Every structure is written in structure tokens, then in C-alpha cells.
Length: 484
Image 1 (cartoon, rainbow, N blue to C red):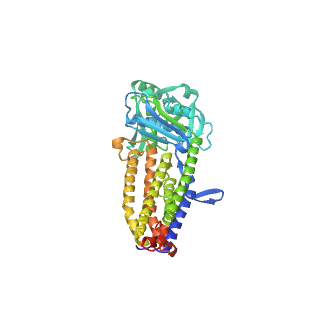
Image 2 (image 1 turned 45 degrees about the horizontal axis):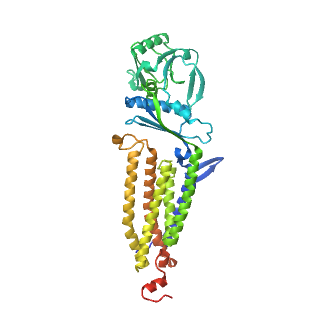
């Protein structure tokens, strides 16, 4: 066996311990009174609703007719708008065209005490109503999370004069138009009205030429275009004012207007609320259980395998640190990941695989020593014999983890077969399991062997007993001598 140099153990061990410390506690500094995070730790992990607490609801059309993708887009758009208006910005929103389902998840706010989840879900599912009204008189003005003003509750003529309702609108579409004079292209929203809507709009545009007709979604004004000409054919364009629409703004407005003309109501097929107290209790229970379990595993490894057990404990710390780093945003090139209870289960399972890998290697070395091999030969033989078993077990789990991520990811490459999935918790399990197994290869195989071979170069670590083998007296007895 080619021994690793003596300093290798200390270099690898120190790097793993520093990585473990940084991944758990992060590295932060002070800039005046502000705390600056240089490296994110466990406290920066985004916890899932099942840990932090929150609301999860599944909406479906209350109709036997399968909605079109455009109608699903419109329904998603209106739910998103209502979330934003409730100042709920940290939400997850998915739609499943194949099964006509929209799933929304949002966590509790940190200091939230009087939030009514049932009322909030009912408000999200309420049928949207789009109205075109005379003028733009409103009662209240607030500022949204994007800094833009939000005008709410019509009053005066705007409250009393409804020009069009959602049922008068056939469709709204975002389109690009080109100015024939300047050649510049701009985004607009085109409207096509029903025959009744066209008559109402012709009368209104004639009466309100050069004035404003505001568009309201429920109680909120979403646009306030100015009438440039009389519209008599039931087709018109909404321009984006002096700044013009971006593509996203034009698409959003079109979706909102279409949502007001949805031919179906949304019903709640499933909802679930988890209180922050319950979620935090689950997290604390898992933390305590994890510390106890790791302590017992470390004690077992030390008693049964001695020096390889000590090395395995360091490697397992590195594997745990990599799992935390992969979800906290520790690495600048890896986005932070929402960690759920199934995700924690994936980490625990991968640690179990890591323990198993170290036990297999240590057992093979121990067996070779009891067969009478020299220490160097036993370590070499043990490493070689154990690798195939570790590789086979881990590669199988990696395949399973990748399949889980492909099939159950929010946007996955198998969507053409299964449709966009909304089961993010299973994706979370697959992700942490995959990272943990990769960590098992790095730490359970590479660093464990480097540290073991480096330690075996020290004279005090040349005793076979330290690797689970026979003591010198026992070995002499086995070789036909007499026990001292």
C-alpha cells in the first residue's frame, strides 16, 4: 500500500472541521449596525411549510368540462394577484394542466398571530370579477411590494357606472404592434368584445372620448387607459401609457382580464394548515433525535472499529456539512433550497448510507487483519474489497434519487409524459438524498481512505488492535506462540 503522507490527515481533518463549522454557523461580519452574511449557514436555510408552518391549498375548476391552458393561466394569474395584494410574496404557485389543478403554498410570516387561513383560502378561490368603469376615482391608495401604487375601492361615478363586465369580454391577448411611421414595436393588450359588449363600449367610448375608462379586478384597479377614439367594432387595443408595456406586463394584464371572464368557479379540493408551533416542534424533535442518533453512531464506531471509527466520524461530519451547504446557499453557484421534512429524511437516509459505507470498509480491514495480513496489506485489501459494495449500493440510490427529481420536480423533463408536477416535497427528498450520496462518495470513500492511510504512517497507529484486529499477544497465540 502506498501510504499517504503524515500531514495529509491533519490537512483533510481540519478542512472538514472548518467546512462543518462554516456550513452550520455560516460566516458573518458587521458593517456598522448591519450584519453582513459572507457565507450562509443553517440559520439561513429556507424551511418548508411543514417546518416553518403555513398554508397549502389545491384548487380545481367546479365544472365537468376540462379547462383550456389559457383558462388555467388566467386562474393562476388571479390567484397570484390576490396573494400579492395580501402582501404574501413568499409563495409557491404551481399549475397542472393535465389534471386541472392549481396548488398554492405560502408560509407564515415570522410575527404573524391573527392570520385566518380558512378565510384567506376562500378569498383566493372566490370568482374574479372584471369591470370596466367610467373614470378612475378610488377610495384608498397603498404601495405594493414592488413599490408601485395600488388603488382600491371605486367611488363616485367610477363606483356607480359600470361599462363592461367579464361576460362582455370574449378574450384579451398580449400582442406586438409596429408603428408604421417610426418602425418601433410596442406591446399592447388587444380586446375582443361580445356583440352586447361592443354596443355598450361604442356608446361609452363616444361619450368618454379623451377620458379614462378604468379596469378593475374585484376591488382593485388594474389599468386605467385613456379613450383615444370611438370603438364601434368591439375590438380595441390597450396601450401601456407613456412608458409602454413590457411583455410580462402585457401578458399579466391580459391574463387578469381573461380571469374575470372565466367560465368556471374555483373550488378547494384539498387544504392543509400547519401552525408554526407544530412545525418548530417537529424541527426541534428531529434536531434532538439527530444529535442523539449521531452520538450513538459515533460511540458505536469508536468501540467496534476504533481508529477507522474515529476517521469515519470526521468523514460523516463532512457529509452532513455538504448536505446543509447544498440547501442553505453556502455555495454561490447553487441557489438556496427550501428544506422540508421529507428533505430532512433524505439527509438522514444518506447519512445512514454513509455510516454503512464506513462500516463496510472498516469491517473488510478488520477481517483482513484477523486473517493475518500486515496492516498495510489489510488496509489496501479492505479498501479494494469494500469499494464495489459501496459503489453498487450508492449508484442504485443515486438512480432512484435522480428519477424522483425528474418525475416530481416542479418543472421536469418528463412533463411531456406526466405533466408539470406539484409534489415538491418528494423532489426535496430526492434532492437531499442525491447530495448526501454524492457526499458519501467524497467523504465516505475518498477522505476516509486518505485519512486512514495517513494515520497508518504514524508509529503509534501501527498496532492492528487500533483497527479492530488482534492484539500483539493474541496474534502471537494465533501464530503458534504462547500468550504472555
